[in-house]
Length: 386
Ligand code: C5P
Image (cartoon, rainbow, N blue to C red; front, side, top):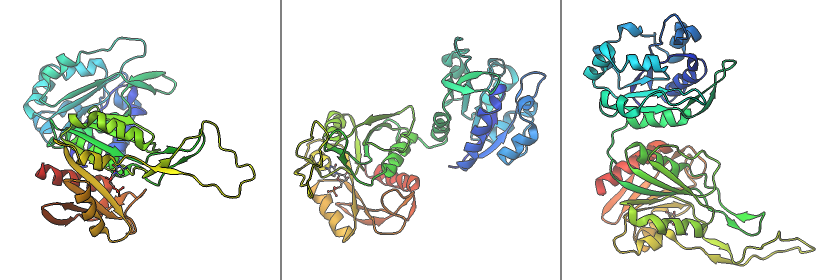
């Protein structure tokens, strides 16, 4: 991700929470500068030295009293985080407020809450003073302050998601999107099930990118071990089987303008799911009768007034011909075809290479890239065709 962030940490949460936040932002390739509070009391520099902040961020620290309009304007985002209510109120009046308003850069403020005490600020008051697009996150889950106890702050994943969103162009704003992702699990008995190698990575990357770009996203996903993206405008709907995924998609498709079906849905399910564990007995062979699962993509494709429909075709031979066939048979607007035999493609890899096929355009081969970048490129192509 690209962008310049000025982070202003304060108080004991500097010690574990803010240092990790700086490190995680830097790992995401943001350019991070720190302006730690420095006063006689529990300031950021009382807990973590200026030298340590500079080493963590990779840039010399900024002096907090020297932050004027020009200094804020050099940044893409100002992160007050986390700051005590006292420091927070400094940024809500006087010189600091005028400089922030003049620079017109979004502010993300993280306000800690002491467990058992009321929230210290009203988001409406804060947001009415801050430049447009600013966000206040307060309270959250317990974070350790070592021997000093605990403080409630938002999960770092949520803060990072919010930062990514604030620094991303909102070209999907107002659009409702449904994404399916991951494998499905088809139960044989209370213990065993049939599934596949899908991890959900590609579908999650698509759902996350759409949400970062401002879409309201419904993410219907099968059982996965990857963490589900956490963003305020992304609603995960966990399911287990193809039948359940079909049911959820059919419940919601009329609400969305775009449906991207990236799940690796099982094609067959056991004819019956045994109520008790199947015993092996003396059997040397076991035959399982299977039946077809509903084809969610084909079912949506057959609907009148359906959303813009995007499918995936993971193929191991004759990739383009098979994908073209799928495009027509399932009545999609776009198929993302990939050759799962190619190095760096397919299940459980961090990268992918897809070719986009549309009924009325020549194939468009996107370069081999990280799945997050492939997702971004696919969504940009979709936006042009919507
Ligand atoms: O026919 P095939 O499984 O190769 O088609 C892949 C595409 O169809 C993917 O977009 C997948 O999510 C979707 N699909 C589906 N329901 C199924 C099987 C596939 O939505 N039962």
